[in-house]
Structure formats: structure tokens, C-alpha cells
Length: 441
Image (cartoon, rainbow, N blue to C red; front, side, top):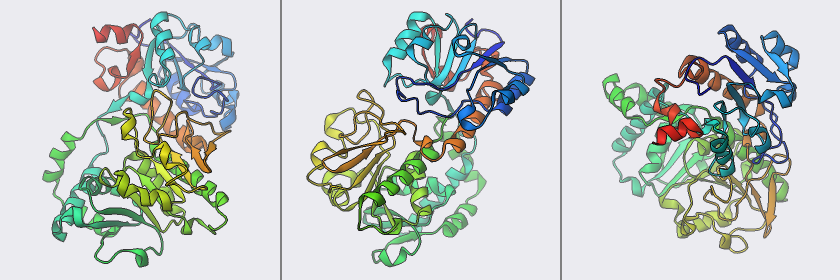
């Protein structure tokens, strides 16, 4: 079946060892019992692999009470129209799926091209959750924040390139403002925690949450609405904020353990590379942990001569920049280890995946696991966990995934009703199998 008609048979697979998780560290489950109950109420037959939710505290009986059948691992992948899970299955399990069926998971085919090859060979449709996008449904706060920052800069009157900009405390609604400020290429950009004012340079532009909210409230709806229409689609199935928070929290704890001179996070010098979603989550955690001053490095300030002093002085470096296929474009290089970066420094990479899908930190080639989260090279701690939310935010990210996947399957894109009429945000996420092949031609 190629999802040309309404799906009857849905399988929820447990997480086991897989190419991206060889240690079997993944403990989450893609759908909670209430989500499975909703699928059952809407007429979809759901089979749940025995023990799928056990490590998150969901017993088989809860899924059975929600209307699901409990099946063995060997049975789960056979006779299903759709199989749902978080990480991809093992190649052996994938090869047992029926031709024409669909696997819905975090596919990561750039890092694991063999997964796509097996799906193409077996005529299995592969929907990559990490590539599903949607028009931003809650973009007004982002747009207002961005326009508010634009007005604050205009009222200040100084060229952005001459400014030291400081956000005085973290606020979820400040994401648009932070991105707008970063893209104006200021001389420096920081996020301030408690008691940070004494560390500010004279003449710095300090943006408080209250001032930002006041400026945002004054922007008329007529100015916001055209900007909403121009917002790019965004990733639908994600826990990027939790990823950033988990990585920063882990890095701070590791830095405190690695340095005898650090009495607490308030004394830690932290540099965050980039200003996207995962970097924003890291900034949130730094403020919650009472880091006094977190430096945010933008395109301008990641030039090596400008960045090197921060690499040399930081206890923790958090990378949120990806897409470094050109060896000459790495922000942190192999040469920086043992020369610029001091022993005992912690580098947390939030975006790296594999040798075929690199982040901006050249020394980090392969991801680590929650069970073995870092390696030490030239005295520098390198951590790049595949599945950062597992390190402290497993429950929050699991519930977020379940809610997002259910909305995609049943209520918004209606994937279980078939492919006809699906938006590009779904169709573009088909990365292997007959449907992807037909779309390519």
C-alpha cells in the first residue's frame, strides 16, 4: 500500500540499537498512550511493540487500554501500512517491512545513506520527520520581537557595527529580536544572567525583556501581517530548544568537574556559536544556570582572528552552527586544539552528525552517545551526543514529539488519510521509496 487511501494498520515500534544509536541509548517512544488512544478513536488499528514505552514509564497495559494490540518485535514491522518511531530501525528490521509500506522516523539519510538505499530497494516509502516543515502557525510573537528590535536599533541611532548589544535576561519571545540583532553584525552580542551589569562595556545597548515587550506591543497589526506571510516554513517535528538546553547543561556540569578553579556556573566563561533554535535553547539554560555573561558569536565574530581570544578564554564552547562541508570553513579547527584552546575546555556540538554531515567543529567527526557522551583530545572535552534531549530532557522532548507527530498524522496534514493533496512540507520529506521516486520524476 502506498498511502493512496486511508491507513488502517499503524505500528508503533520500540527503540533499539540502530546505526545512529549503536548503544541502544534511546529511551523515548514516538507516541504516548493518550496519542495512541486518539488514533484508535479515529478508526486506525494500532499495534504497539511490547515494551515500547517501558523506559518512559508506560506499561503495555496502558497502550492496550488505549485500544492498541501488543505485538512482538518480530511482528511489528510486518503487515503494517505505516510504522512510526523516533530513530530509524536497524537495517535488518527495515528490510522486513512490506513493499509499499511507509516508515515514519528521524531518517538522517545524509548521515546514514544505507537506510535510503534499503528503502529504495525494498520499495518502502521513507518519511523523514526531521525534514517535515510547516508554515509557522505561531509566528506573530517572532515577527513582533524582530520588528521591536529593529525599532530599538533605529531609536539608538548608532551603526549596528559599532554596537555592543546585550540582552538583559532570557525571554522566549525574544528570539526574533536576537536574530535580528545578530544579523546586523554588531561588534559584540551577549546574553546576560544575574548580576551582569557590572561587566558591561560603557555605552552598550542593553535590551531588557520589559523594553522589548513594550516596543513589540506598539507595533500595529498592519505592519505584522505582511511579515507573517513572508516567514519561511519551519521544522514541524522538533525538540530543538530542549536540545540546546540539554547540551548547555551537560557542558556546564562537565566544565565544573574539569576545572578545579570554577566554584560554580556563575564563574564560567561561555561562548555560543550561532543564534538559531538550538543556540537559543543553550542561552536559556545558561541564564537559568546563573552564567553571568554568555557571548554569542555571529558570522562577523566567528572570523578566526576575532574568535580566537574567546576560544582561548572560554570554559565552555557551545556550537549551534551546521553545514560545514568545505574544510576551509570550520569555525573551530583541529589546529585550535593544543594551541588556542586550553586543556580542560569543554566543547559541546549541538548539530554534528557524522563524517558525511559535519558541524562547524572540525575535531568532532562522529556523534557520541548518552552512555559515553564525550572524548578527550589534547586535554579538550568534545561532546556531540546524538539525541541531546536524552541527557536531561527525555520526558519533555518525548511528549513534544508525540504531540507533534499526532498532529501531523491525524489533524493538520492528515497523513493517515493518504498522500493526495499533501503540502510540500510533507512531500519534500519523502526521501526514499516509490513515492519519492515518482515525485523526483
